[in-house]
Figure 1 (cartoon, rainbow, N blue to C red):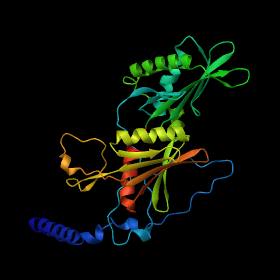
Figure 2 (tube, rainbow, N blue to C red):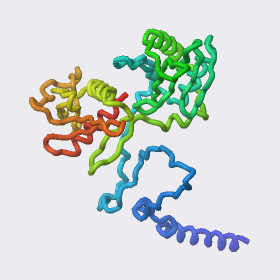
Figure 3 (cartoon, one colour):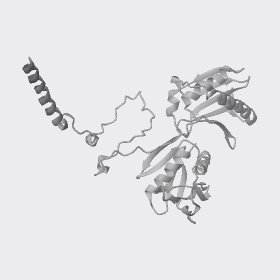
Figure 4 (tube, rainbow, N blue to C red):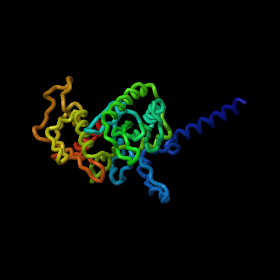
Length: 328
């Protein structure tokens, strides 16, 4: 019996050694298999269906551009969110809107609940378009529009007074400002304690006002805004990102900006004011502009581009990425 057990044990030992010795065959290296993958053609949809409006944050690079670089490249940062639940009433000329740092699908039920608990009657609430109609008086109605903002995971809320007879917008800034101030207070009290989201309003999360695309190897920011708002948003982003603006020409849609280099980071840092922890001698601002930020309006959209005076595409991409992060 002892001899039989020893024989069985020796078989297991021999087989175990052979298995571990052939680990390369049983467990082959697969981390570079992605280089052999092929991109299939897009799905052909019937005429009755439309393509989803989605943004590809992880585009597949051309295999010819990989070369000897076998490491998987990091996805480019598109737009950042600070992560808090800021609620602000903003104004540009006669245009007013509420800015909220949360997804529209979260803002939608709070917006609807505001009117459901008010003295007014809600006559329409469409989560697909983000529109809420409120019966205000005999001659007019209020219409709230919940839209995705410029920044990732942000909401913009607009309020209009509309003539019931002809559908025209009535200019009544005092009424709108008063009502929107009440909405801001309601959101400020509700947003921190409200953690739900509306499944019916998920479509609003995809209707972003900002996207990026590549043009001749350069990144371009596309904004669903008119020129006035795009100019204001980029100007605010330059301040938020601490980027020095040497000059600007609004008629041509151009900002002239400079950069400074931080040796301890090994990257280009873009500054408009000095940090207390940085030695002023380490920051060198050029007397002449190093970059041009251009804003052009085409087909009801505006496009933001960065051009380096010395033709350095990488520096231009870093500058544009910094603006992306600060747009709101």
